[in-house]
Amino acid sequence: MSRSISLFTLVIFLVIPALLLAQAQITVETPRHQYGDIQEADGMVNHTFTFKNTGNDTLKILKLKVSHPDMTARAIPEQLPAGKTGEVVVQINPANLKGKIERHISIRTNDPDFPVRQMTLSGNVIPSLKTTEDLYLHRSGNLKFMSKHIAFDQFMNNQVRTDTFRIYNAWDKAMKISIIDPPDYTLWNIIPPVLEAGKEGVIAVTYDAAKSKNWGLSMNTFVLQTNDTLEAKKMITIGVNILEDFSYYKATPDIEIPSVSFSETTFHFGKTNPGEVLKHTFNITNTGKGKLMIRKVKPSCGCTVPHLEKEELKPGESAGLTVEFTTLGYSGKQMKTITVISNDPENPVVLLSIGADLP
Image 1 (cartoon, one colour):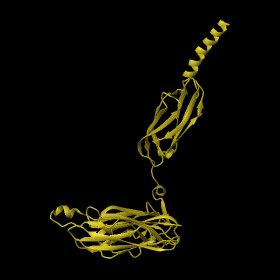
Image 2 (image 1 turned 135 degrees about the vertical axis):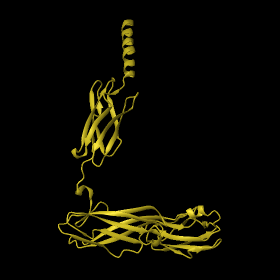
Image 3 (image 1 turned 90 degrees about the vertical axis):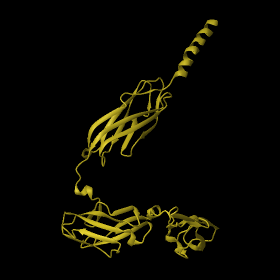
Image 4 (image 1 turned 45 degrees about the vertical axis):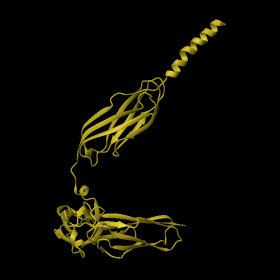
């Protein structure tokens, strides 16, 4: 009996530690791969990383993560017995890439010692020669554009800037192009005004911020008139963000500076009935020493209408900004904003908000 107990004790002594020590272990044979030159025109490039479970328990792939949206990766299989080999199959799409690239794949497993391993791919993408179809992606009838939008960001109020729309005539006839009713703060130069079939052209636009008398962010829509039988009128847009140039304050140390102050910047009407027109007045005060000029008051939507009592305030003077919010068609919690732009160099843009709870 004592001998049987001894043998049983010996088995327990040998087996239990082995069970306790059982663990998965991932070993990646070559964690880095260099493609060399990658031709964009050849499309997808592939690579397979090989890994092995060098532990004594089942290896589980818990998560696989890629570093860029132009790549995909999958593990085969997702559970790997001890001593077996698996693969991570990777694809990279080189479209619109250029020059040296480096991409990473992170693999998370149940390996307790190294739960996350990383694999790396690198190469040099040789871009393909772009055709006209590749370059001019935006189409209006038979006229194609590289872009139908120009953005003039960080545009000072005393600046004049020029940018271009690049165009291509995809028609089999010459196309006449002109701009309809351009505002006086823009100058348009269409080169050439008659664009031959299969030819490229340029529409140069000069924008004078001072003449526009505009402030802050705005989107301007313009219409081109053509003889294109497929679509005669073509819409293009120019976005601007006109800011005040406050350098004159620094250049003139003794200049009197205005300062804008509000009675509050947030107001909530509480629970209201649908269809009501809600009104609230924000008081604006010039707490500075120079003349305060309210450059622009812009609501966030057409349902909100601001009424400014005065645009210019002397030092110490106040004015009301009444905001009307038409609730018709709205429900639930609502929050609308009003942007106030002034010549206060410390707070040139202030955001006011009104809110209401509707059924």
